Length: 251
Image (cartoon, rainbow, N blue to C red):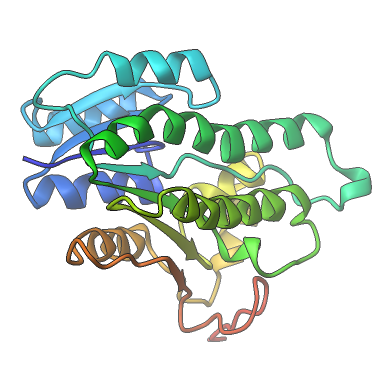
C-alpha cells in the first residue's frame, strides 16, 4: 500500500490533497501545526489510513525525528508533498517587516529543504519515490508586494529543477506545481486576519479551489513510472497573464 506525506495538511491544498488520497485508498501522513484541524481529519477518515503529526517544518530536528519515527504501515514514504508555506504582508520591500521575511524564508524554503533531505535518501536507496513541491505562479511573475514570497517560490522552482539533475540515473521523480489565484485561507493569513480584504481579492472572480490542485497532484503521481511531470502551471480561466491580471464579472 502506498504512503504519502503531506505538509501543511490542516487547510487549503494540503487538506484537499490528504482527502483525495485517503479517498483513493492511500495511507496518508498529514502534518501541520494545528492539532485540532488534524483531529478533524482523523474523525472523518479514521486512524487506520491516516497518521496525524503535529509538525513545524521550520524545525529541522523535529522534521528529522518525525521521519525517523515512522513505522509500517506509514513507512516507507512513497510520495512527499511539500505544501506548507505562506505569504505575509503585501508591503513593498522598503516597507516590509523583516520578521515576515524570516518566517517566509524559514517556511517556504527551509521547510522544503528539511523535509526533502529527510525523505530523499530512502527513496534513492529503494530507487522509487516522488517529490511534489507546491510552488506558485508568483515564482515566475513579479508583482508589487510580492518580493520575498515570490522569491521563495522561485527558489522552489529552481530547487525542483536541480533535484531532477541530482536524481538523474534513479527512478525518483520531482514535480513542481504552480497555482495561480486560489481561494483558501492563504490570503487571510497574508493579510493577517483582514477578512474584508481577503474577500475582495476573490470578489466577482472564479478562482481555483484547493481540490483543483489536489487533482493535479493525483494526476502527476499516477503517471506511469517512466513519466515525470516536471512542472504544472495552473490558473483559473479568469487569470490569464501574470499574478495580478484577473478578470472580474461585475454584476
